Image 1 (cartoon, rainbow, N blue to C red):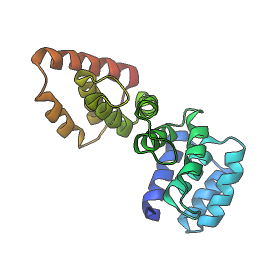
Image 2 (image 1 turned 180 degrees about the vertical axis):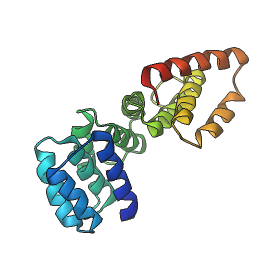
Image 3 (image 1 turned 90 degrees about the vertical axis):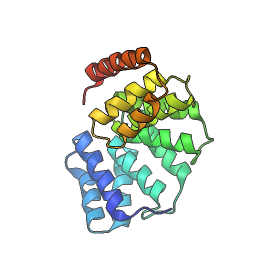
Length: 196
């Protein structure tokens, strides 16, 4: 499935903001995307990705995952996401979580998905905070724990995920007041450790 170029550009733009990248082939690759020269963007990202640039690796993985300028190839996307994620790139960590959760380019593996979502969530990625919350709520790849799920949902809400409240409301209906109090303490601990 191809994603619209506007969505891809937004993802890349935020990836650059998060990494503080400046100049060179990476910026030229972003400019090439803005002018819809995806082939040139791919070539420039590839140069930097081979040098170990995590942002370029993330962008290259995203091109493969979305089929922009290259054939859609989840195996190749995972390869590049893994390289960037191992350097701490939060977007690639989240993307690996998604690929493992859905079995895209890798064997479906909830434990691996939980691992990557947790890494990204601990770096403040609100979408990963929702994702790991869901995994705790359902017991997918990690021990079922509605208290910890509630805490992750609360942190995601603090970080601007509007849908987080519906997750909080849904799980809270099944929790005792003692569990909610513990969840609030855990959420505060997460907030002090991770922040917004």
